[in-house]
Image 1 (cartoon, helix red, strand yellow):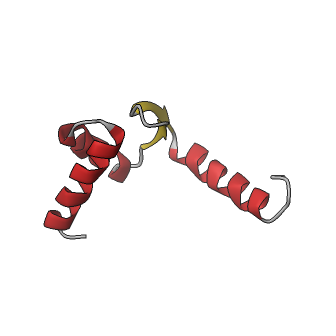
Image 2 (cartoon, rainbow, N blue to C red):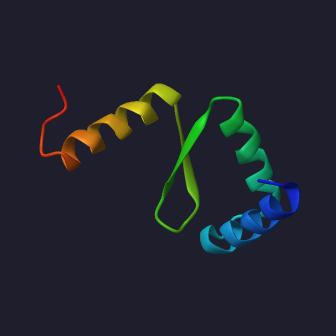
Length: 71
């Protein structure tokens, strides 16, 4: 994604989540450095979660979609 496109995404995203573009840039930097943040609702309140937690969530979701329990 080029910078212009990224900027447009950031602005649209910030309108949806009611958080500033500056926060988005910080968020982007943290995500790329391995910290994943999860959003709760549209309030834009954030909670730190480790990358492994996010991966676990993805796994659990995959199992759920495929009608199985996460081992």
